[in-house]
Length: 93
Ligand SMILES: [Zn+2]
Ligand SMILES: [Zn+2]
Image 1 (cartoon, rainbow, N blue to C red):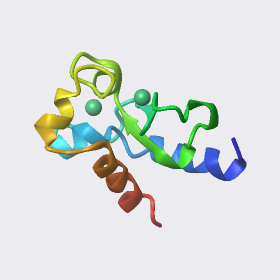
Image 2: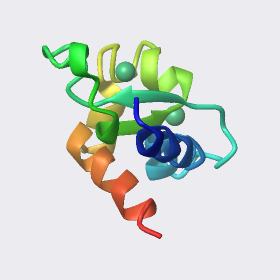
Image 3: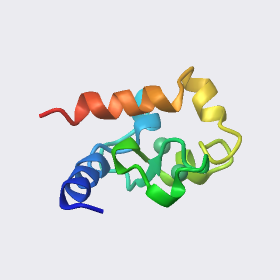
Image 4: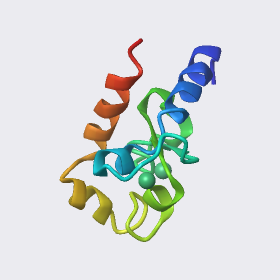
């Protein structure tokens, strides 16, 4: 990972959980994990750090999370790309 990538990931992690905030239930200081969109689709060897989305543990790895049945995304009527767009809109400063 380059210095620019790790600085960017630090910024992303400080946003708090994307799903929870889109649902209006999130607090910005919720501990998050970094999810890479398209994870598990053959890009793992060159982790695309710019495709990072901050998610809390339930939204990331929970039953309803993006690695679970993904019902959190259905509830939000939202795709992972839209989560990424949320991140990008908040990291432009
Ligand atoms: Zn969450
Ligand atoms: Zn993930």
